[in-house]
Amino acid sequence: MIKPYYEEPGIVIYNADCRDVLPQLEPGIDLVLTDPTYKYENTNYASRQRSGKIYCGRKAESRDWGIIAGSDKTFSPEFLLSIPQVILWGGNYFSDHLPATPKWLIWDKRRNVPSDDNADCEMAWTNLPGVTRIFRHLWKGICREGEENIAKSGGKLHPFQKPLALMKWCINQAHPANFILDPFMGSGTTLVAAKSLGRKCIGIEIEEKYVKIAIERLRQGVLI
Image 1: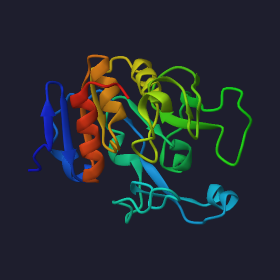
Image 2: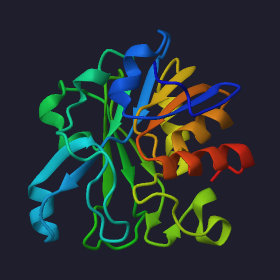
Image 3: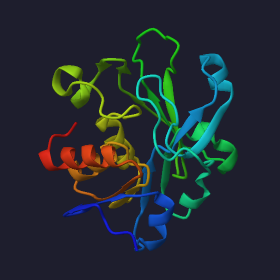
Image 4: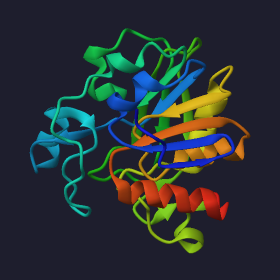
């Protein structure tokens, strides 16, 4: 039995591989909201887009952040699909492991800012009913809207951090979403969003330094 690393009312965090924790969780989770990240094998950007390889829960390489733990096994999302509602960011990279869906969530990161070598948007696979929806929120280098604006919060806390406003929007796409699971928690944005909306949430993260960052965000009550 893996014990929680941190608990507060409505929030539980585990520092472990999510596949080891999930079998011991009690029923009742009604939404998985997560970003199961992937490794690009090549350094050339065009090649990276064509040859993305999915790993278990962390991007293995980052130009700015170095090696991230937990990248040694191929990622497949099937073990998450038993949850009634699922939102998987980056689902376009492993869509061959997912059923067809009418409702993708699209995050427009540009908001009329010109394109560069990075993606204009990110995509989340869902099993939710309805049609594809778009959320527009600028997130380009140090240019970030909302609570994560560099003038308010400084630099990013995780190489693949997503906006708090985006995760709140995702939670509100699901009905109900009273008990949320993020099995690839990173710096805890899903948990902060859940807490701010009065929802229960479990976060699981394999790398302890990001667990500590998430806990600090929750303790401070600063919604960044």
